[in-house]
Structure formats: structure tokens, C-alpha cells
Length: 192
Image (cartoon, rainbow, N blue to C red):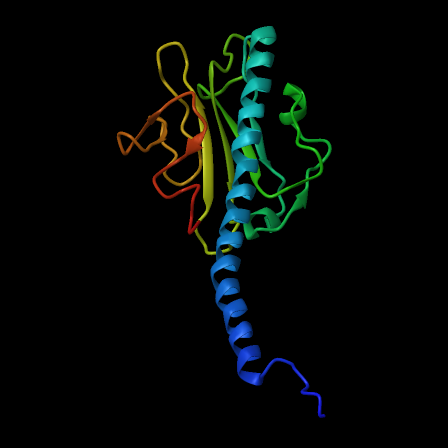
């Protein structure tokens, strides 16, 4: 008697490969978008921590501290991680600095103009974070506007970062103050 050898036919193997290819075509783009959304969280989280540091400093010294754009490397605006510099003027003053490498560049603008100076403390500030995580030319620009007692905020330098606040998805206007959010509709989400 002859024994029959069993195995998979070429057609069966091609069907399995096709199914795996279809699943990969669905899963990989979703995974990449999820990864970009997770990376965008760095900017929001660090701005919230920077806000707490500024408020703590202002409670003690009655002024907010401005800080120039750091890190100065353009790597963060290309989706690459860059090392946080030491020293970091302004950021070190308020006791804030991320650990390790960052994907965003950060800055703080104080107000009114000419502050801080003797007799002219900064009574408001705007903190901003920017990056191009997906390298599509559209910046993920997040901001936090802290108004003074009269409700006046300091304008940020980012595109469309206006003194009225960050983008509010309910009113579709830039009217949220004292909240971390995108400067305008579409900023902060890009293609993901």
C-alpha cells in the first residue's frame, strides 16, 4: 500500500499569505496613527506641568517667567527626538524641565511688554509647544494662555496663537483660556 503524503497546496498557501497581507494593510496604518497620537501627548502633558511650575513660581515671587524657544535644534520640528539642554534659562528658574529627549520645542512668553522689571511684573503668560511629528509640514502647535486679572492674555508667537485662547471644538472658536489645547482648528492633530 502506498501512503499518501499530505501537505498544503500552493493555492492554500497563497490564500493564507493574502489574508495576512490584508490584515497588515489594515493594522499598520492604524498602529502608526495611534503612535503619533501618543507622541502628541508629550506636548500637552509638558505644557500642563510647565503651567504648574509657572503658577508655583508666581505664588512665591508675584511674577511669571518667560523662556526662549528650547531646544534650539530643528530636530524636534522634524519629528526627531532631541536632548533637552542644560542649562535652560527661564525654564530652570521656575524649576521645570523634561527628562531626557523631547519631540517638541517649548517657549513661554510673559506679559505685559517689558516685564519682568522692577515695578513691572509679568502678570500673564503664554506657554507653547510645537512639533511636526508626522513630517507633513503641518505643525502640531499646542498652547496654554494664562490671562491676567482683567482677562487679558499674552499673544503667542505660533501661527494663529491669538490672545483670545486656544481652539474650542464646541464653539469652533479660539476662546478657551487657562486650558492646554491646539492654537487653531487642525493644529495639534495633523493627519492623525
